[in-house]
Image (tube, rainbow, N blue to C red; front, side):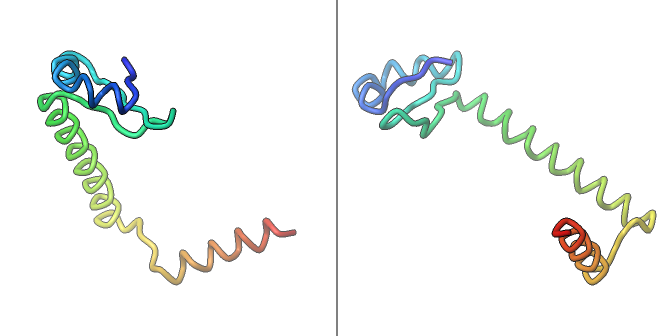
Length: 89
């Protein structure tokens, strides 16, 4: 991935837009990564993938609920306290 510093990205914004249509372009400010510019097509694909992963995780959680593989909050807290207490030994 090509990396530009923020001042170069600002000065060459038109070129940056063209480059981003073909591959992501990183933007650094003060030597640290702050953004990545991608095409709108790539962005939409990332949103779709994120939505699909989230839906898959929801489906897995619902399957656990339907199969009775759930714990109430009190049980979870008791197990966590035991883990923390045992780790302190």
